[in-house]
Amino acid sequence: MRSSQRVYTYLLTILFLLFHAATVAAVDSDDPNSLEALAEAGGKYVGVEACLQCHESQHKQIIRESHGQSADARTPFAMNGCESCHGPGEKHIINYIAAGDKDPATVESALVAFSGAKASPVEAQNTMCLQCHQGGSMLNWHDSLHEIEEVPCSACHNSHKPSKVMDRETEAEVCYECHNDIRAQTYQRSTHAIREGKVVCSDCHNSHGSNGPAMLTQLSINDNCYECHAEKRGPYLWEHYPVTEDCSLCHRSHGSMHNFLLNKQGTNLCQQCHAQIGPDGTGHIRTFYDAWDKDAKRGRSFLGRNCANCHKVHGSNHPSGPNLLR
Ligand code: HEC
Ligand code: HEC
Ligand code: HEC
Ligand code: HEC
Ligand code: HEC
Ligand code: HEC
Ligand code: HEC
Ligand code: HEC
Ligand code: HEC
Ligand code: HEC
Image (cartoon, rainbow, N blue to C red; front, top):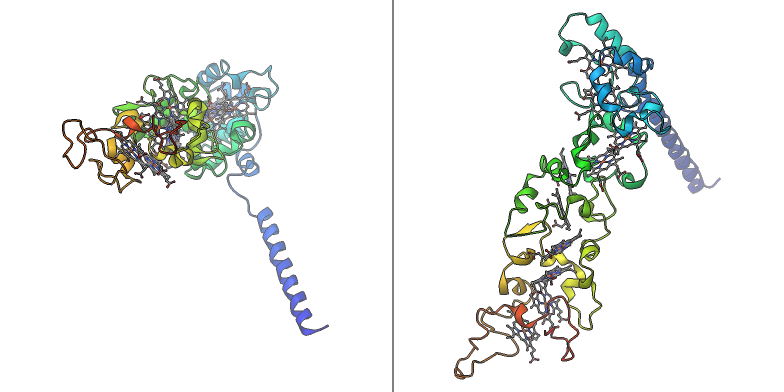
């Protein structure tokens, strides 16, 4: 064997060992939030009847909801009942029985809890829900900012009672618990009728994650806007570059201090990019004179005029050419 070959074989062996060690380690290391570990921590499954002894009120609530329909083979109540979500309850019951009159706060729960002082780690909570909810709108849950920032499903969903988040009228209240800044934007001068409930967060966002930016249900900001403002897609004979590029170069999504959800007012909006043209028309290819003010260097009729008075900013089919005239 040539020496270079020997080095090669040696490297391969090390790589193999490293890889093998890594896979063995992955199997050996017990993630305390995995389904298996959570099941082991709880003991045996004891069934709904056992839980009922001490938790009648929770039972009354959930059998009115879709999760409590035992006739539907896919629901928790067609499987392990309460324990489909909370994990096996044997140890929990033993602990509480053994505790007698002791303060419940001092007793170890031993199952998956979704709220209160004994709430389990977020990953453990979400593991339980993800058993049944993987496809559909959940496809991009992993890697979504909500998953990365450890937002539990139960921050938005209460599985015992109807969730506010599932009702268009109350959905935003849930979001505002963490996104209060967005609420403030909906009170600005121009908004997207979010407060009136005509447009809701989930018309534009998938809270479970998406393939687009900002968890938008569409692949890009423009695709999102075209969904409801299809006429802005054109096609136009003369397109305006920023419009086809990204509507948010000029517009805010939730609210703005200026009309039409614009991010700047009047000529300032255009000067972000057309800096050579001043608010008085300086630098503009043509100036516009008032009939009685021919000596004025700059036309007064330009002053105070909005660029959009003469230009069709979203694109134009005007025969006079590429100047986007109305
Ligand atoms: C012997 C009575 C008893 C039984 C049976 C019982 N629990 Fe509990 N459970 C309690 C007590 C007591 C608490 C503490 C309540 C409190 O703090 O107000 C509790 C609390 C909980 C909590 C909240 C987390 C915690 O520990 O504070 C969950 C979730 C729960 N039980 C689920 C279940 C489920 C599911 C079953 C059936 C598998 C079950 N329980 C059976 C007595 C019981
Ligand atoms: C679909 C999953 C699911 C099922 C099935 C379920 N629960 Fe829950 N449970 C939850 C979630 C989620 C919460 C948190 C609700 C909230 O946000 O206030 C909760 C809350 C609770 C609490 C309060 C402490 C805590 O964990 O937040 C108790 C006690 C409880 N459930 C008991 C039960 C019992 C008893 C049953 C069966 C009759 C049951 N649960 C069935 C998901 C479930
Ligand atoms: C054993 C399977 C199972 C588990 C575990 C489970 N679900 Fe479900 N869930 C279902 C089924 C089945 C439906 C009904 C779907 C339908 O009607 O198409 C449902 C419906 C829902 C809905 C829809 C609307 C409604 O009726 O409330 C939400 C939201 C939901 N689940 C959230 C959760 C959350 C959060 C958890 C964890 C706390 C969870 N689920 C755990 C099976 C499960
Ligand atoms: C940030 C809030 C939020 C979080 C966190 C969240 N959801 Fe949802 N979920 C929603 C909203 C909003 C809807 C309603 C969407 C709609 O009407 O288009 C919904 C709908 C659902 C539905 C029913 C319809 C559908 O889209 O399939 C299920 C099931 C569901 N969520 C499960 C989960 C599970 C499981 C988790 C955790 C892994 C979770 N959700 C986390 C906000 C959230
Ligand atoms: C429990 C807190 C919590 C709730 C409730 C919540 N979010 Fe979030 N959300 C976060 C955190 C944390 C982030 C990441 C940091 C940030 O951008 O603020 C985030 C980020 C986002 C983002 C930005 C994603 C990105 O890629 O830039 C959107 C969009 C969003 N949330 C929408 C919603 C909607 C819609 C609701 C209601 C259905 C909601 N959130 C409810 C905590 C929450
Ligand atoms: C008409 C569509 C639309 C609606 C309705 C909408 N959003 Fe957005 N949202 C967007 C777009 C587009 C972006 C990305 C561009 C931007 O940042 O403005 C965004 C960005 C965000 C962000 C991340 C950036 C930031 O500004 O913090 C959060 C968080 C957010 N939205 C939350 C919400 C919540 C909560 C609601 C409901 C109250 C909501 N959105 C309603 C379109 C919308
Ligand atoms: C879910 C539908 C929907 C989506 C998506 C949507 N809009 Fe709108 N938009 C509306 C509705 C409804 C109105 C109000 C129309 C009316 O009152 O006539 C509106 C109004 C507007 C207005 C005028 C606001 C005013 O003050 O008069 C602008 C500008 C606007 N949208 C821009 C956008 C942009 C930019 C996007 C993409 C980020 C977008 N829209 C996405 C539904 C939507
Ligand atoms: C170069 C800046 C600019 C860009 C980029 C832009 N807009 Fe506008 N938009 C404006 C101005 C200025 C107005 C004010 C009314 C007018 O002059 O047409 C407006 C008004 C609107 C209106 C309300 C009035 C109407 O015409 O219906 C909607 C809706 C709108 N824009 C949607 C969009 C969408 C969707 C995109 C992206 C495809 C977009 N805008 C990109 C500058 C822009
Ligand atoms: C985000 C940057 C940006 C903003 C904001 C912007 N434009 Fe433009 N605009 C461009 C670019 C890039 C071109 C293409 C220039 C080229 O082809 O030389 C263009 C082209 C034009 C043209 C066509 C003439 C030409 O030189 O091709 C007119 C007219 C125009 N813009 C007017 C406006 C008006 C009016 C506004 C404000 C409502 C505005 N623009 C805002 C970037 C912008
Ligand atoms: C009173 C109507 C009017 C107003 C107001 C106006 N324009 Fe124009 N603009 C025109 C006309 C007409 C042309 C075509 C010039 C020609 O063909 O001689 C033009 C041409 C342009 C061009 C392409 C040629 C060049 O000069 O680069 C740009 C870019 C432009 N305008 C931007 C703007 C901006 C930015 C504003 C606001 C600060 C604005 N316009 C305000 C009428 C106007």
